[in-house]
Image 1: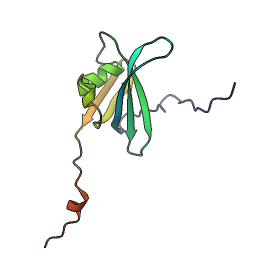
Image 2 (image 1 turned 30 degrees about the horizontal axis):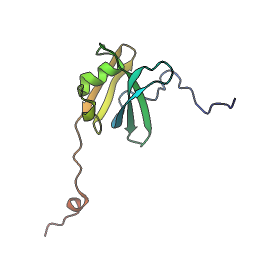
Image 3 (image 1 turned 180 degrees about the horizontal axis):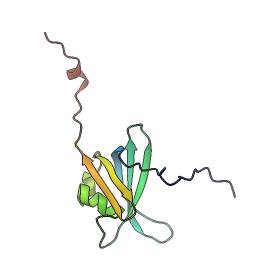
Image 4 (image 1 turned 90 degrees about the vertical axis):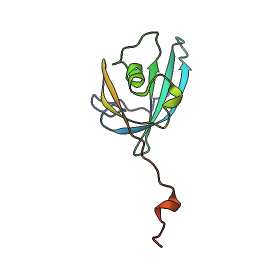
Length: 118
């Protein structure tokens, strides 16, 4: 069997960084292959263009401090409205997860940016 080309994250060196800004690039439902658990896969992109994903496991009742609960508490339960939102993880440890939604930054069209005064 071939060697895996992965690096193990050390404590404090997790993929999702507390305090860093992320844009939610995509949200999709999925079912795990082995146990057929249902979940939501959220793809995040940071300011450096690095993408990471987080699996949010679905359940009938979820705690606000769970991964899924933190997303729902901050962004609402309509996942169609999550893509494109800018978020920041305030805390991201087991049973103490909290997300802050940041205001969208309005983008100025290029032609507006360089208009002269005359």
